[in-house]
Amino acid sequence: MFELTVLLSAAVASSMAQNPAPLGPVAHAGVKFARVYALIQEHAMDRLDPDHLVFDGGIRGMLATLDPFSAFFDPEQFAMLQRQTRGEALGFGSILYVTPGKVLVLETARGSPSWRAGLGPGDRIVEVNGHRLDTLSFPSMIQLLRQARSHPVRLGVIHPGHYVAQDVELEPAEVALPTVDMDFKFARADIGYIHISGFEEQTPVEVYQGIEKLGGARLKGLLLDLRDNHGGLVASAVRVASLFLKPGRVVLTIRGRSVKPQIERTLPAPSLFTFPIVVLVNGGTASAAEILSAALEEHDRAVIAGEPTFGKGLVQSVLPLPDHTGMALVTAQYFTPSGRSIQRPLPGTALARSSLDLGQPSRFYTDDGRPLRGGGGITPDVTIPGLVFDPWMSFLGEGGYFTRFASHYLSLHARPPRSFEPDAKVLDDFRQYLHSDDVRAPEPYWSRDQAWLKLRIRAALLNLVYGLKVGNEAEMRGDPQVQKALALFPRVESILRGPAGAHAATRPAAGHPPQS
Image (cartoon, rainbow, N blue to C red; front, side, top):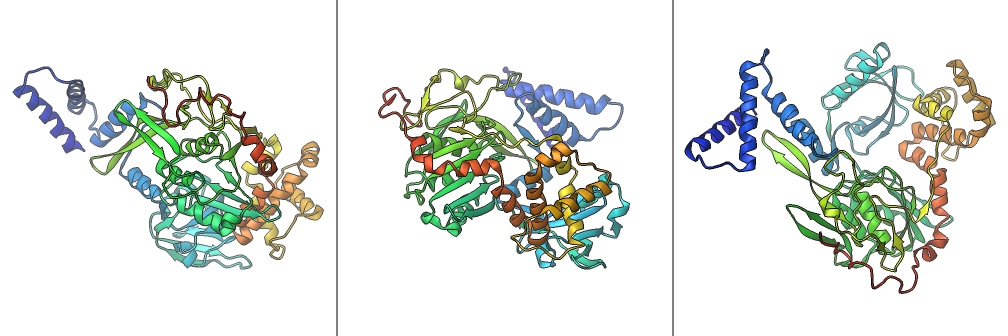
């Protein structure tokens, strides 16, 4: 990077000497940057790292003045981003529960280094490369685990039911990170459930395979959970939309100052699934997840339920830079099929009000004439508030008491069956366990939280015995938002029915937002 900057400075200086004509704004800014950089290198009290000056000071400083989303990636971060886009990560394929002095394995990905070494749910890691974890401070333990995940490592592991650690040697490898991280079926209603954590290259295939596994086109409905999905590849969201929408339907339009307007439509092949859909969203649903939600809503294909979404409707182009670095830059804005901007205004930034928003209509409608709300984000058709834990339940969750109790419980009892349901005796054991750690259970909270206490204890035990997927499914089946969304399916058709012919003449043409 130092050589690149010196060459840039020399080239600019040469250009000025050979051509005294006025410089363009970009070249003029480059000259100012090069002069400041040269003065710092010549006169600063201490010798400075050129990469730090250019990467952290120059590039990151410039991007910080634009918006909260543009970012610079150093070589390690850029390589990680590329792996993530492919749905991969470098590591051992384990999901760990970490608490001071104790590390438990919750899940190992099939085919991963951890899986091949025989690690599984409930295994306790007590040593990493000769360092006993119970002798380290919590920050030191976290740092050791982070450093170890990208290098060969020797672990001391105690398997459930054993008391002596076994040495396990692991080599890091590229591990697949599926974005469909949960799928199951409500058998009585014959309705499938799928949660998408993000949109990467393989997401459309994962969604299709997940639906087929649950029953495919024979399902009576699909609950598509996009809560806390922060987005990802827009092309992936378009392909997922193509599974449910008719061919050629507009999914979004892209417009920017230096970007030619572009309309993204569903694939020409017929949609594979026509069953009713309820999409569950919340404040963590953003970007590509909002694009998919809006397309299904505006084409009257799905009921959107939950809480208002985040409101991020920006095109972030990832641009490669020298020295294996990269930059994410906001280059355009997304508009929904009806012409809505998903992006919420961000006061104090370049996104306080985009020029692309000017001239937008104040009213929006679905294909069938249902009114929609603009102003950023997606407002659900049916509001279902998320669960708000009382302070005591939040304390127990943040302190890891459910997983810690589950580990303690398994050391004293046989493996529970998948159908295990905590009874009054298990709750009493949990209360005694809290007392042994000097945690008292306030009576008003204890009485009110019985159902949630049982659900969290059950999920934690199933996590350690059968893996994270089984425990998470148990917890999701008991989620009040999921249960209320499931109850909407008999009403999907009536919710999606708009006033016959109303506003048809005043709706903007699909996929063609008003020009500014």
